[in-house]
Every structure is written in C-alpha cells, then in structure tokens.
Image (cartoon, rainbow, N blue to C red; front, side, top):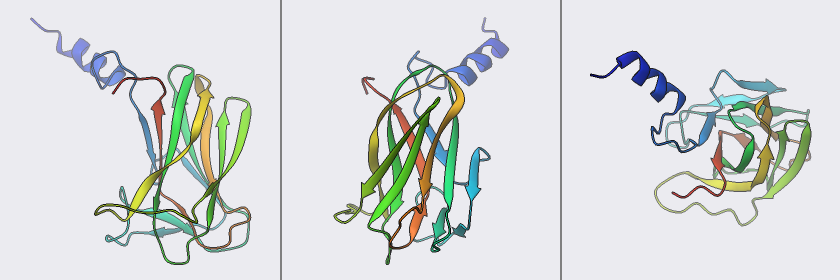
Length: 163
C-alpha cells in the first residue's frame, strides 16, 4: 500500500528521491529571469544549449538576472553556459548575489574552447556560500564588454556532494 499523494509530495520536494541536494538549473526563458536593458532573443537552432539564448550588442548597461530560491543555505559551484559565437566579447561580466553579499567576477574567454559536438560549454564561475531563500541571483552583464555578450543558462551544483 502506497499513499500516492505522499509519494508525489516527496518527489516534488526531493526530485532525486535519495535525500541528496539537486542541482539548480535556470534557463534564460525561466519566469524567474529578469532582463535589464536590451537583450535580443536568439533561437537559431544550430547554436544554443537549452532552448534559446539572449544577445546584447549594445553599450547601454544591460543584465540578465537569473533569480533563484535556495532551499538550504550552503555552498554551490556556479557555472554559466556559453555558446561560442563570432564577435563574442573577450570576457563575461557576472554578479553573484548570495544573500546580502554581491560578488563581481569577469570570466576571461580569450582561450575559451568548445569541444565535442556542441556549440558551447559550461564555464566555471566560482564557488559561493548562498543564503537560504530568494535573495540569491546570478547576473550576466555587458559592463565593459568589447563584443557581443551572451546569456543562456546558469547551473548551481551543491559543493562537496559525491556524484
């Protein structure tokens, strides 16, 4: 005898069903994403990771903010998915908000290489201690960009978790 509603609730709360902490993936099309400034949506099916990505080609300040609700305060390793494009910026500016702290980072893309049969790669952006709740976000900005800036997706992987 299995209580189906209890099982469904358990799977909703813990999709891995083994007590481990799930990764957090946020795509640029997620309702929790906030756009500031001018971001064109690219849906060229030959060059994106999840379903689309955002392109900024301007000089006016712009950001794509990936907002998230962290279920338990802990360290997460942050990655961003970047397609390799012609005339892309030589770096990606990021702001990682972990509760009340803001960490600014520039990811150097001068030697960015894509391997395999994909059009992009997950790029390491650091490991940060996130607070429990909704005061957490990862933003991709065009601040100081010297080319086209791409915002596709971010991934938070719980640190120190055996896979």
